[in-house]
Image (spheres, rainbow, N blue to C red):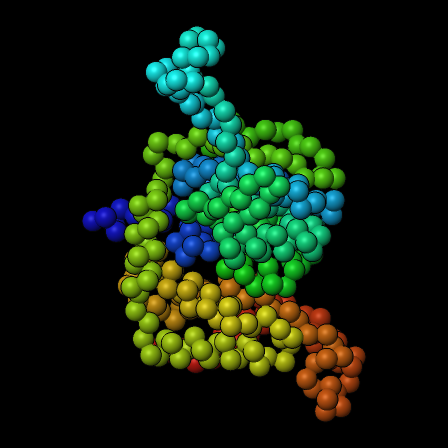
Length: 349
């Protein structure tokens, strides 16, 4: 009965909500892309999803070429107000008359939120992107005054323009999945009339600090118990020998595709199987199907595959015409390469 309740909630999720849920289930991170004109609205939508759907704290940092290490490390923090109460019977307090009248104080404490939305991180300098990578790898970030550890759960959402500037290679490889949101699919949470989003936006010439500790709603649609249960189910998901072979065939065919220069890394292969396993309980299954493997391939490899330069295409070693090779590669995108591979491999029954 508990699984049925979760499944009924999952069925009502939008595409972006489902992408974020899969990352939370797998304890991984994602890229969300859209057209340039819709980035601001998608940013607001993801903030609402984090706060209202999952009940998580959220911070937003907008990056540019002027973003510094200090900007990034400070602006991903949020502040919580805490009240401390002093013991009136302590020796120190008895001596200080101030404590006779004011026995409590309020102070702000900084921490990392559950969800960080990094907008246009690909535009930031190499050092800032490496700092984001270290945050993912170590779960910590250093400032001049303290060391902050990520909470559980933790999700970094890299919001960017489709076909924009690529991320640093190693950071890109550490991202679990990528998803393109078509503005025509709408922004469900914004359209429901949420009022906390600020319409005014500051200049993008530097990092814009929009990091605030939003109050968690009492009853999020999908709470931490739901996420933990789905995560447990994914770890116990069964993968048959035939499906495992199918998964490995896809990896091999992608690696050997004439248009692929790089991107089929060992970490990508690990994420490929992990996403396939994570998709199963979301669909009410305790085993991985070929269709789930195909869906996982489309999400895991689309941001990783690098299309080869015409001069380096394999057939050029055997005397192919450069102009013909260039014309062939012009029509190929990572998405198209994935589809070609999926169409060329026999699907297990």
